[in-house]
Figure 1 (cartoon, rainbow, N blue to C red):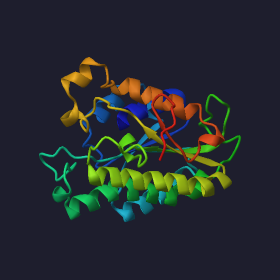
Figure 2 (cartoon, helix red, strand yellow; figure 1 turned 30 degrees about the vertical axis):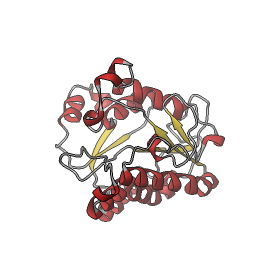
Figure 3 (cartoon, rainbow, N blue to C red; figure 1 turned 45 degrees about the horizontal axis):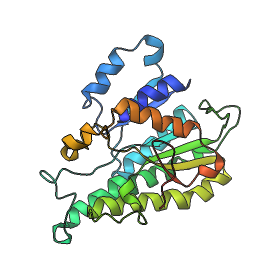
Figure 4 (spheres, one colour; figure 1 turned 90 degrees about the vertical axis):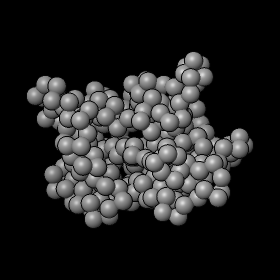
Length: 254
């Protein structure tokens, strides 16, 4: 899904894009896409290595952005981990399946990492109206922080009995961070939002895709999902900052 965000942002904006990957050169789909771009578009994309669980790398990224660009107009936190129940300890279906190391990893990637990155980049996110190259369809010039969350992270919506303990916990923690940071970020001209993409055809969701879901059209192509999520971001107003919304722009309670 991260690659599709790069494509959409390239199409919708005019500025530089810093695409972060765990290890540069380890994402063949990204490399293939970049190799197929014309010179002008390729020059807009800067690929940088980043492990969200490594605080030293987050600090290095902040220093690099400060020296190279001096500001950040939009931060898209789209990395996440769910597991497949075959090669990982989660997502768990029972309390007895909870594993400390897996829980810690989920928290690091899904909640702590995105919030630490937001923290380190917040000085660069301070809105500079007139200089921001990511102006949305509403004309808003506030900088934005976009976080991919999940419907199962909604505590009030947890009525179906599905466990997925550590994934729910980590994404609920992310939501809490989004809500809490919205107040401080708003004062410096930055809006933040949590988005639920729905079941999308990615490697992360494949272990949980069923034929019944596909037959009902409930497994979305990644191009559709990211396009709709970007529409939600583009239509953001100040009142949306600190909230969680699905791909159709419908509010989801925390």
